[in-house]
Image 1 (cartoon, rainbow, N blue to C red):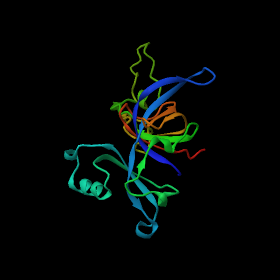
Image 2 (image 1 turned 90 degrees about the vertical axis):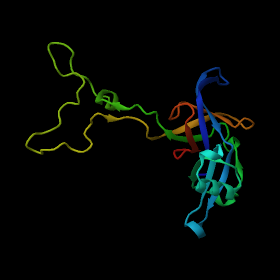
Image 3 (image 1 turned 135 degrees about the vertical axis):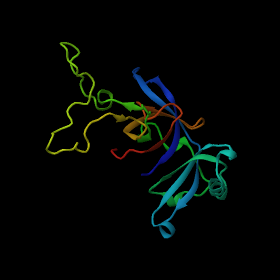
Image 4 (image 1 turned 60 degrees about the vertical axis):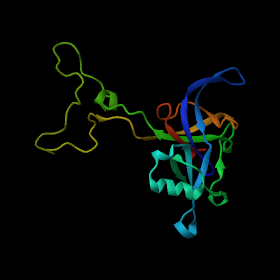
Length: 209
């Protein structure tokens, strides 16, 4: 991984490409982020950079968080994430990382927490089909057969059943950056990214590129 940044999802819109086609994009407020900590091979056994993003009121942070941020001299920040960058050694604590680390045309992976949808049935959660609604059928939206009776006398693991849907980490891979506004720290990414508006996402180099 060569480049990474934390961002806030602002919403979706559309822009026009040079050939006049309409491109759906997600607007990300990418940074400014600050280097809060450096992990080194000598001290930690690996090299990484911890980035902080999104200013927070001091009363919202506990003492360990305040001390950690004060040591870096970066002010009060709400979110911290660690990235194993190839050139982590070149970063300095307190350094500002802005949206211009990426450029138009770059391919990125965007990770975030998907929208939570509560308790869902098998039709919504696993795309199963419902039973017939006519001719006296009493089977409509139930999970269906649980398996054998006396053998195996249990329900196998991974059986598709109703349950909690969403609110898990999701990564959308190989998205294209359509535009970068360095002054406003705004990145336009082609397509949709996980999470609701206002959600925290991480933007890193695409592993498939």
